[in-house]
Image (cartoon, rainbow, N blue to C red):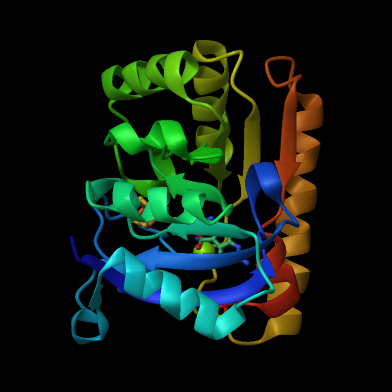
Length: 240
Ligand SMILES: C[S@@+](CC[C@H](N)C(=O)[O-])C[C@H]1O[C@@H](n2cnc3c(N)ncnc32)[C@H](O)[C@@H]1O
Ligand SMILES: Nc1nc2[nH]cc(C(=O)O)c2c(=O)[nH]1
Ligand code: SF4
Ligand SMILES: [Mg+2]
């Protein structure tokens, strides 16, 4: 089955979450069921790059990965958009596994796919109030229960924080799923900024703010606070 692909890039480091620093290739799918106010990948769903979507068979994506970085990678991160919209990604996951490639997936947790159980590092990133999206906790409850039961790899929660209301949301999520590792990530509300030095200074301050708030919190004891490391290194540049 053909898959709508917008970007294939790397190797680079995973800049976020549970495997931050991991050398990886990225495959970015098109289309999302959400429309987060601050999405840093709006081009995947706002129609602006509709004509750039490549419909590719899994075998073709594998060929492209090898053409770009053959022999230099052992890990692939699938992101989007929401890759969980694509039932056909299961065949690509199988193909990567057959080639001894480890697989990470980024999704917001709004849709389940049976192939989730084959993902090595699954990041669920439910959206806080600042995004203007609403979490369906019934779906997320079922997803986390199914993963606990059937997933061979591991999963984590990653919540992007812009303000104190987001932090309250994160506390509720942490209380609801105390056994799932929780990562809090600095929100970037300057995704159009092309002045890398100014952006770095700004994001470092936002990171400092978030660290302080978490240190003060009694509810958030067992959490990890992270930046989006790639934006600190390369700003808002695409394909890195
Ligand atoms: C672009 S999304 C694609 C995967 C999936 N749709 C999701 O949201 O998890 C990848 C990650 O980037 C995060 N993200 C998106 N925009 C961001 C921003 N402006 N600042 C910080 N993180 C952001 C999302 O929350 C998600 O964890
Ligand atoms: N280096 C790097 N790390 C990332 N982690 C999550 C990303 C994403 O856009 O999903 C991303 C990305 O686009 N680049
Ligand atoms: S769910 Fe992910 S890709 Fe979709 S709009 Fe939100 S941040 Fe962007
Ligand atoms: Mg990104």
